[in-house]
Image 1 (cartoon, rainbow, N blue to C red):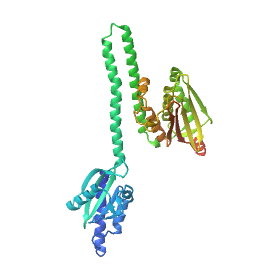
Image 2 (cartoon, rainbow, N blue to C red):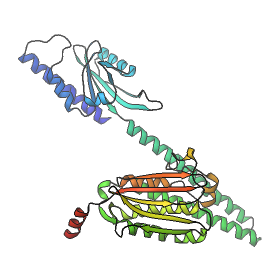
Image 3 (cartoon, rainbow, N blue to C red):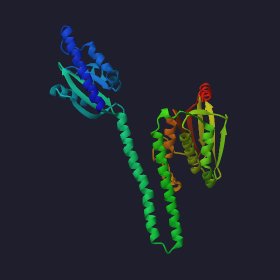
Image 4 (cartoon, rainbow, N blue to C red):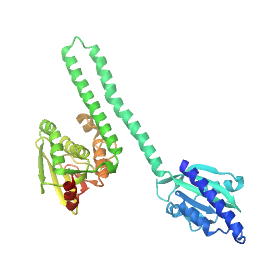
Length: 375
């Protein structure tokens, strides 16, 4: 919002300056005809900027304004902005609105802050700042906090009820032991949730610039498998690892990638049947390192494929409660891949199993050798 005000003030000041200089050094121009100097001013403004004449004809517009779809031909496309321009022209004051504008795509809106100021002769300077991304992040934060509150409430409430039941069962050792086991289970679930929240927060708060170390994916996968060794024994699910190369290097954060792969292997184990196996494979294709985790478990329905990477989303609610899943594991995987300029792909069918593939750009071998030689 400050940027919009600054740009508006700067733009008006320059327009006034160029207008006065034009008046002093050149013959008067016809009403509503704008000089090339004004066009130059608009080009240096950061946000979307437009100048409308007395008949609301768009005399000048920045490329950003065109890209946002604010102009159709030479007409302003949104009634809210036209109303703002008319009021600014009439009042001769700088006016501002926050508004949501349709984009022509279903369920997709443009959220903007717009300011308008009359600059004389019926002309109005309109500056529009695109706040869609900021609005989206605000909504995500609100949803995230609401989900966290809900997710924390369940185990905390359960611990409270179990503790109350224990007070009434002090003389019944068998019941007391069962209640203690349940408290331990809820405490573990709460601990897992907190750890996942910390991991997700760390990933989202990490700058891509900070991820600058050479990482061997073979070591990453071996560490991820090791962290799941107790779980594979508990569920009687074998983990089979295969790599066509001894060294597969990427630039990144080893711990972040280890957590991502660990989460995929953990999910594969949890949703597999006892006596089955999980395959973890590293391959290289088209300059991309691919870490593929495949299971032959229950699979994921088509209706859930697009949503499994959302925070707190669980395709199988009852199974998640049973296993203590937090609903953040796959979200962490997705964010970790994106932070490393990669992606994660999913293929799954109910009754057949699922295959998750993390794809990451590899390190150029010449650059890697040069860097290591300097080190």
